[in-house]
Image 1 (spheres, rainbow, N blue to C red):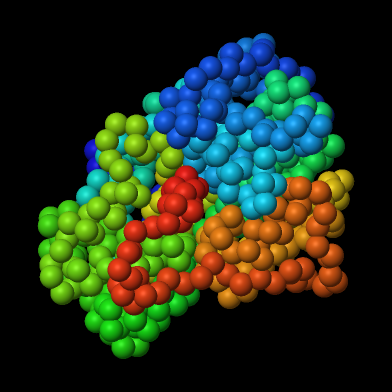
Image 2: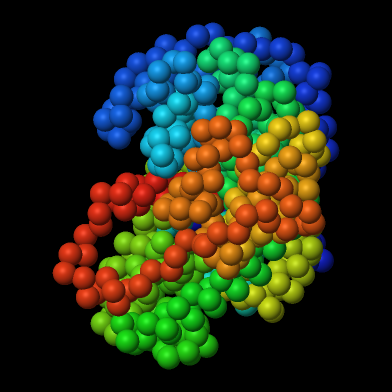
Amino acid sequence: MATTATAGLILGGAVAGPAQAAPGPRPAAAQVSYTPPPVAWGACESPGLQRRGAECGFVQVPLDYAHPHGTTIKLAVSRIRHKTPDAQYQGVMLVNPGGPGGSGLTLSVLGEYVPNGAGEAYDWIGFDPRGVGSSQPSLSCDGDYFAHNRPFYVPATPNLEKTWLARSKGYAKACAAAGGDLLDHLKTTDSARDMDSIRKVLGRDQINYYGFSYGTYLGQVYATLFPQRVRRMVLDGNVDPRKVWYQANLDQDVAFDRNIKLYFDWVAKHDDVYHLGRTGRAVERLFYAQQLKLLKKPAGGVIGPDEWSDIFLQAGYYVFGWADVAKAFAGWVHDGDWQTLQALYDSSNPQGPGTDNGFAVYLGVQCTDVQWPTNWNRWRADNWRTFAKAPFETWGNAWFNAPCIWWDGQVGKPVKIDGRKVGGVLLISETLDAATPYSGSLEVRSRFPKAVLVEGVGGTTHAGSLNGVACVDDTIAAYLATGALPQRVGGRRSDVQCDPVPQPDPAASARSAAPSLAPADTERSELRRLIGVR
């Protein structure tokens, strides 16, 4: 993270943010109509897309939909055409992996993961949202922001707090310089209108949509602004529209603390493999003891206490990497292996020019969808209060979002999500999802009266559909094939209960004479990589 900026202005403990009295976006009805020019489809750069015969190109859209004849930008799109006879064709399926800031260009491959060939009747459309990846322009501000051995997240001293405030302000300043006018037009409403531009350029009256994580909120906004344009929609890992975005992050902190305790219980259950403690509490104590050790002397000079907690955060999101994180934990404790820790950290936090693109756009969207508190006293009080009961992720998450205090983009107002005019929508969530807590899925279900919610009972995995749980994946396949949904039940609860994504069995893997992944598992590993964490 950048350390060149000066500390934020501190007056009586309050940090002065910028004056942000910008009006919200125009209502949908007030937007000037816009139809993009045709896409010049051609070969894709991605080898995976090339193998699948995908086409790639750019959709030209206005930077500001209120001024469609002004500056334009380009959205990178990919298309994998339907494989069924045209008589069975079901239209286009747009996909978003989440973030915000996640690249979705290669997610046109998602159709092949739908069971029973139910994805083959669609044209699957991957795209990089505005500012992301191969779209033009692409926003990046400081590629070294997640460099190794950063200052301790927990602001236990005034100097640490000032240091992190300076870093946060410095990043916001760097993005103001790099982003220019783009920063005023990165809201979820802008991306929803981009989706409708993609619909128009593809010549379709309606779209189908599959959204993960933040992509569920993008789907909610699209369905609210353009209800008549929604045909079928799958939303996995649902954002609570009541809590966009400051409260949503505080809620995450409590949920991640719960999930990391469940993970430590799992590590203790397999003490015969990892030898890190026979109870979850013992493993947890070891985790925090090692974190303090790394505060004094970083592992290999690169993995400090922040990097340590960021590595384990992966286990709070998904069960997929549980064994990898535990193996790295054990390797460090027993053998001093810091190289594996670094490899895990770097895999999720690359450094170098342009590597902060996802983070920059994450902030560009969240900081301008809604006004965040600009008084640091509010942040300090809320995060220390949350830290007292949920220490694992609270301050890391606070500093992840703190640039919003100084963000330069024009702030809007969130859309009031209303799905009453939308047909059947399929919602998916595991009960203990930490990134988008289950209560959000219940709230979305209440706002979409024709929606059906599938619950992975007791699971901790975030946005894990199409990963081999037949109960979930077959429900998706049936819906995409016919439009049929399971029966909706009364009350504020799920309509269908399924097993969650299963926890790994490291002992079984260790005993296996052939530990390599089967082809289907290898493909799903690639899918999990494509769907971003945030």
